[in-house]
Amino acid sequence: MSALDAFPIAKRWPAAHPDRLQLYSFPTPNGVKVSIALEEIGLPYEPHAVDILKNESWGPEFLALNPNGKIPAIVDPDGPGGKPIGLFESGAILLYLADKTGELIPADPARRWETIEWVFFQMAAVGPMFGQVGFFFKFAGKEIEDKRPLERFRAESQRLLGVIETRLEGRRWIMGDEYTIADIALLGWVRAMVGFYGAGELVKFDKLERVPGWLERCLARPAVQRGLDIPKRG
Image (cartoon, rainbow, N blue to C red):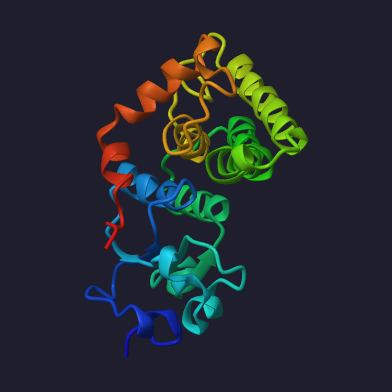
């Protein structure tokens, strides 16, 4: 009997390696956070593509694990105490992986909480707002006469970029010399803003002195490049 048998999602996306951590995701800004972290850590895992373009995350098997219907989600057959655990929400999964392995997060308690603080900053502010301004700019805003929503999203996104810009003064990474889950949490959304959504000019990304260089350093990491294409699309 497999430790995954209790999870309906494992029946919809069967595991070839049921002893490994199972990742159910799609390469979106939220989805790639976990694949990047797993690639950085080197923890054995098995990715499954949950195609959001086909609304697969709204099926009963996925919703049984993640009632929010959003990717990513994981099942770890070797969870706390050796018992399987299922988790959703990318920030929680990043913290779980860091806690499980002791990787990508400082050991010092104060710096550990500071790292968590910046992960929460992404979850509560950067991700939602960059997603709004990006989607509105790329797919909707240009066709709507009332530009006030787009202007509000633009102004707030610029403010949030300014927060990151200030944080990076004198620092190579969000936590200084140590690359952590705080960088992983942020990089997908910053990359999407200037890449997929093409909103860099809108938020004056090139006027920033530190954030572009930080993003380049993130994208230069081999694990990041691998993680950006996991799971592979179709």
